Length: 456
Image (cartoon, one colour):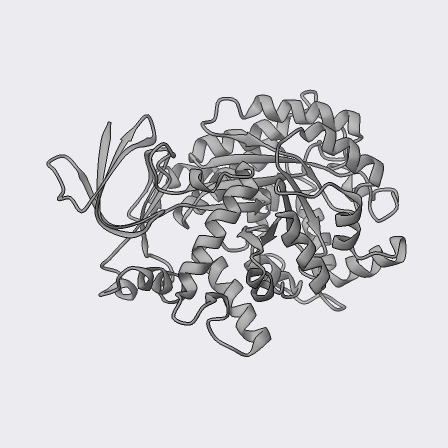
């Protein structure tokens, strides 16, 4: 058993002073509040639960910064996607694992302690299956193991290039499966994560563009009671094409045709009507928002203030991993609402409420539900029986001086910038110390070699 003593910690009951956490086998075995530190206690200033990152494409971290040149026409998600396809053309298992491992280490440094990996790269260059169908899933699991981050692996079913079952393009060959071949990959994914503590496996029909109604039903049967994630309504073109195909908007179609419930995470859902927002809320599904990536790609602005006012549930994800910053995702979300509505503290809710606290609490609960399943929010909190997934902040950082309680969250999210995170524990193991992952140098060297090969 080890013990940590915190001057201030955010517990389920709220901010609490002089907190002593006892940790046994990676889980919190006892919590004492209002007590002095004892000899042998590891002492820290400010403790928060680690945030879940509900949507990641880890390999895209290697592409960050390489798509910021203007093309011949109007740039959008669709032109970015072509550049992403080119980047994948030479990526093998070793490169995938190396990029993912450093990406996950950077997530931990940024305050994320669990990642939902939306894993759609399944086959070899050219689209030929690997001898082991789960080769690349095994590499993702190995990367998670090397970094220490908790993993919810979301193998993606992808079969078509557009609505109505249109044939995939040659560049999509590495993603494509039938329901039968996907079932084999799903089993391999479940096998790959078994050595990892607290790992989960869900399923992810890629989008309504990429699956037919029949295929969606088949994938949901394979899911059992596990979580289901799907890209939806990210771009206006997607909405227009769905209307042309079905006479329904994407979220409208999904809510009518699929058993959407609390197990589901609707990733992006950027372009939705008030009626669709109400439908998502009524089903208890989570909106998976990726504000930094959505800003980078010019996707649009999700009506988060309206959604939250309806008691809608959301979490945040780093998606393309162009920037890894848990506080930055929350800040970008709030700032998008301020720009759209020409107001301040939009997500705070009631007068006098902390904007940072409401953002943090919502993302913690919604992310836990999306990655662990309904009713899982307590597992993400600092409470007895939960894994010790803890982020400590440096009270000596200029942005946190003389801050107390919710002022700490407000200042971390809106004023601190890089360097405020001191240590991060995952399942009781301190993986980040002084803001650096314990294996950063080793993982960085492997990442550097991978990029050198990809860029040669």
